[in-house]
Image (cartoon, rainbow, N blue to C red; front, side):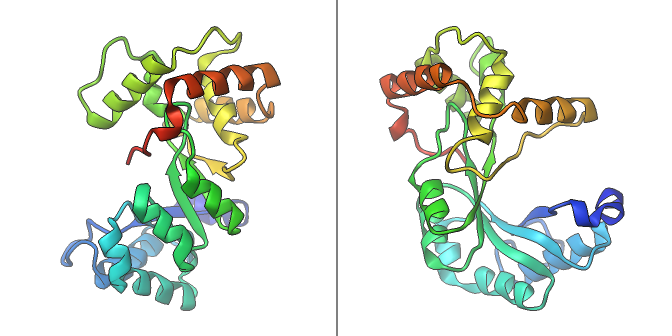
Length: 231
């Protein structure tokens, strides 16, 4: 909040909504409305630039209540861009329904951007890639217990990339940040030094053509086009 207020004009402020608001049920209109109010109050800002409905199922989106509440906040100037974060059928609906200006989905070497993000770009929506580092799948010596991390571990083993001549984090970040279906990538960190490191990596531009070709060949051999997005 302090950073957002001090450098408001330099920051695109994005958050997620839908649950965890005391006193109201999750995935209801009041939950969205109060969630926006709480976020604005905590951060000390008049408006949120981007507010995502966070991985709610298709039935919630088509029910209309939460979408209507979010769009009402946009109309009131409390949110600048309505957004959806998720995968699969719900993401496809969010892209096609016309309610959202931005969508967010998993995208990495082990979670290649599928048709949803590509359709979003074609439709003129903004696109955000989450988990660009695949939860560090290449760093795991054994399969993690968590289902999402376990899936990424399995996919990384199946990918069997050859030696590419670049540090692993550089390969992962540059591949996502310069992906044709991606506008922005979220690489979470608690370290300012790591944030600067990541920004410097992305500033190097797209990966070399031979590296991209090797990744593409490995993904095709592993059948990565059929891998569903991991929530």
